[in-house]
Amino acid sequence: MSVPIYQVDAFVSDRKFSGNPAGVCILPEKADDAWMQNVAMEMNVSETAFLVKRSDGYDLRWFTPSVEVALCGHATLASAHVLWETGQLGKEMPARFHTKSGLLTAERREEFVEIDLPAVVEAAETPPPELLIALGITAQYAGKNRFDYLIEVESESIVRGIRPDFTTLRKLPVRGVMVTSRSQDPAYDIVSRFFAPGAGVDEDPVTGSAHCCLAPYWSAKLGKTELVAYQASPRGGVLHLKVAGDRVKLAGTAVTALRGELL
Image 1: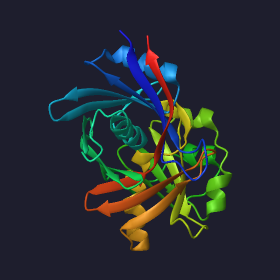
Image 2 (image 1 turned 135 degrees about the horizontal axis):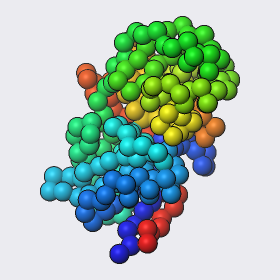
Image 3 (image 1 turned 90 degrees about the vertical axis):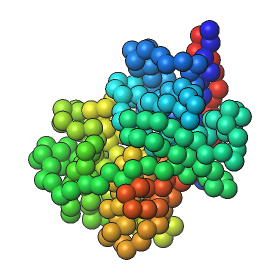
């Protein structure tokens, strides 16, 4: 029995082949964990989402090419996009996903898909010396949430100029590290990059879960509840952020790049 699978670019910018590619696999029933991990390895994008329909929405899990993760924003947005595009969910109906991070929802907002995720707030913490050495940067601020380190640096040029030592980063006991600063471009409030070699992704093109931390962090610093963020990976991507208490709403656009079947 063949299973449909899609590759969707999520949080795209104004140019082609931007955003973060996600695999989306809609299953007729629950699948074996090892099989899903192998499919994610075969897809070889930062995350592949697996969905199973239930009476009140969909069960949703995310796998990188090497591990399962507890929260992924761009593959959630991509999953909602596929459900609406294929007619499995009415375009005016919200998407409801049951995940390891609780109930997540998505709605259409004109040309955007808006996903509602939990805020993942950091607390100040001194990172291992090897972390900053591997990134080649000096931190103006360092903190950590339950997933990742957050490092603020002085300028966007520093963010863009990082050339990490991935071998060293891969050895550190953390999922990933986000490096961020204010944006020099007036079109955006903040800029960031995200590195997660320990989770099988050296540099993630656009990271929704990181912005569940970056949004409340910069909201408090800038005194704004709505922000526009640019993730300055080689592909690049744009996220519209809204902080609402202990939730973060991430909005972006998505484009289906590939459609296929798992045989």
